[in-house]
Structure formats: C-alpha cells, structure tokens
Amino acid sequence: MALTREQIARRVARELKDGYYVNLGIGIPTLVANYIPDGIEVMLQSENGLLGMGPFPTEDEVDPDLINAGKQTVTMATGAALFDSAESFAMIRGGHVDLTVLGAFEVDTEGNIASYLIPGKLIKGMGGAMDLVAGADNIIVTMTHASKQGESKLLTRCSLPLTGKGCIKKVLTDLAFIEIKDGRFHLLERAPGVTVEEIIRLTAGELVVPASVPEMQFD
Amino acid sequence: MAGLNKVVSSYTEALAGLEDGMTLIVGGFGLCGIPENLIREIKLRGTRQLTVVSNNCGTTEHGLGILLHGRQIKKMIASYVGENANFEAQMMSGELEVELTPQGTLAEKMRAGGAGIPAFYTATGYGTEVATGKEVKQFNGRHYILEESIRGDFALVKAWKADSYGNLVFRKTARNFNPLAAMAGKITVVEVEQIVPPGALDPDEIHTPGIYVDRVIVGQFEKRIEQLTTRSAAAQV
Image (cartoon, rainbow over the protein chains, first blue to last red):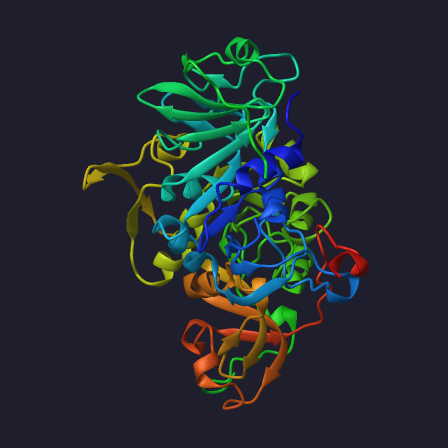
C-alpha cells in the first residue's frame, strides 16, 4: 500500500538526529514535527523569523504576531529566538540548517527539483524554496511518486521550471525512499506492501535496484 | 516636525509626497506585521501605477490585496503570491507585471539597498528562470548569480513600539521584512501600536535605530489571522 501523509512524515522523522536545526516546508513536511523520536532534541526553524517553533497554540494562546512560514498560528518552544527575514535566510544560505524537508512537483536524476510553478496554471511563487534548496546540503524531498493519472514525477529531466539545480540527494515518496547520485535514482527502501516492480513502473528516470530492497520501518 | 521628532498625527501627513509611479517597499509576511492603515490610506488616495516590493500581496480582501481592486499596482516584486484571486487574474491577463523573487534574495535586496551595496552574488536561483539575464560567477567551484539591490521612494513599515526619535521595536514574527524595508526607503514611514518618549526604550533592545526612520504614526490594528490553527487544550496534557 502507498504510504499515507502521516507515514511519510514518520519515515522522514527517523532521519532526524539529536541536536539538529531543521526547516520543515509546508504540507507533509510540517507533519514531521509530530513524530520527533523520543530522546532527541531538535530545533525547528521557520523562515519567517523563528528558531524554536513550538506546537500549534490553544485557543487562549493564539497570537496574530506569531505565525509560521505557512501563515499558521504557532507557539514558541523553550529557548526560541526571533529575527528578521535577512537573518533568517543568512541561516539558510549560510548552510547553518542541518536538514531541510520540502515538497515538490518533480525531481530528476540530476538532482534538479521543480516545485513552484506550473506555467499557465498555478501562480504562487517560490517563497523560500529556492533559498532552501540552494543553501542546504541535507535535503529530503517528500512527494507522491506519480500523479493521479499514473504519470511518474521522478524523471530523467524535470519538465517544469526548476526551483534548484543539482541540489537534491534524497526523495521520500508514498512508494519508496530513493537516493540520487551519479545521475541515477537508487532504490533504498520500499513502502510496506509495495512491490519493486510497481516502483520501477512508476519511475521514469533511470532507477538502480539492488538485489534486495528492504521494507521501510517507522519506529 | 521639529528636530529628531518623527511623530506625525495623520495618515495624510504620513504619506505626504507619495505620487503615481513610485516604488514602495512594504514590510510584512502574509498578513502578519503589515502596515495595514498605511495601505488603506493609499487606497483612499487612489495613487496609481505603483511598483510594490513586498514578500506577498495580501489576500483578496486584505493587506496589499485591496490595492488590486482599483488596479493601483502596476508591478509587484514578491516571493509568494498565492491566496489572492485578483492577483492571479491580473497577472494572467497581463495587466499586472510580476517579478517573482526568492524570499531570501528579496530580503537581502532590501538590506543591501539600505546598506549602500548595489548588488551581491548568491547561489539561490542559479540554473532557474530567476537567473535569466543575470551574471553568473564561480567562487570555489560553485555557481552564483548577481542580484541587484532595491531601494524604494517610500518604505512602509509596521513596528510594535517606537520612541519619538523613530527607534523601533518589533514583536515576535511580525518583525519579518519590516527592519529591512525600513532601511531601504528614501522616506520610511512606520506605523506602530504605541509611541513612547525618547529614553523609554532600552537601547540594547532597539531592533531598528531611528536613523532609518522619517515618520512615525500610531495606529489601531485589526491584525487579521490568515490561517488560524489551534490544538485543543485537552490534547496538550
């Protein structure tokens, strides 16, 4: 079975390490905050100017001056710091963030990512995504493996305008955990109940499949 | 105005000199920390053909979005313009010129503009449409693009507190682009929740020194929330 949004978030959370500063993008990446493993301490960065993002507020705690990059009301964790947008992106561009998790429309075997613009359709803008992919060394992209029509989003070349060039090394889809290196996709793990054949069928770019592909673990 | 006293008493006075065709740099992230009354005053004045530099363009009915109703904005420089039906319609029809700019690049363009730095190299946007027509240079084997800084005829800023000299303190994530906008305006106008006498702010706690600020006005704020998200009080136990 394809992973649910929550399962994708749980699998990503296993990549968190003690002491990490982490930026979580909008959508599925935000859910990762719900699954931080016990016994490790991480600090969440929100690019609108908050290091140390806490959980959503109770109704009594809501403060219109305290939001995350998705414009949702949030709280501050103990030890949080506040700063302006230039300082926030100094952290991001300066490579100070240990892990970035963000969504995408497409990725390709060269590590390119397209996530912000569908010409003629959706006009939203890149927000901080171009800065995040250019500034971070350790990025995990979360996305569905294929469109609802069954078209692969893991391509030889992205067809949509790029958010970043040659910057993506890890992709977690609803079907598989994939590494990008040497101009190819490499299958690391498969979702429980998903066959290697199905992953091969829905991956358009060249995919290297090892003799044995372990099933994903969540805890 | 006398001496270093920057306080003005009306929004008309706050925006004196604003003319058609000018460039405005506006603070805020979504609807958080926006100079909402100054934006309303621009709507009332009917100033047109504006170039607006701001992270977002408000929502359909709030913030900078209200300036789209009367087509007062000619060109928008922003990083993210979702949540705004008029924006998308005017952009698709070609009435509104849009320069999508990465958020960090936008912040740095304002900061650099205010700091007298005409341009800077950044890796952000290399190999993307953002790099079109821009100089590319390699440093230590990595590609960077040259981005020019921005200055505005006016900067519109929202702060929490000011003293009458224009020293500013922001509150929580309502700070965002505001200190950078404040640096980048030829005339910087700040609206605040309270004005205190000089000396009442701890000099160590001032986020934006008054040298960047030309006019200060005290206003009442709606502080509209874009995405009210809560957890139940029970769930936290």
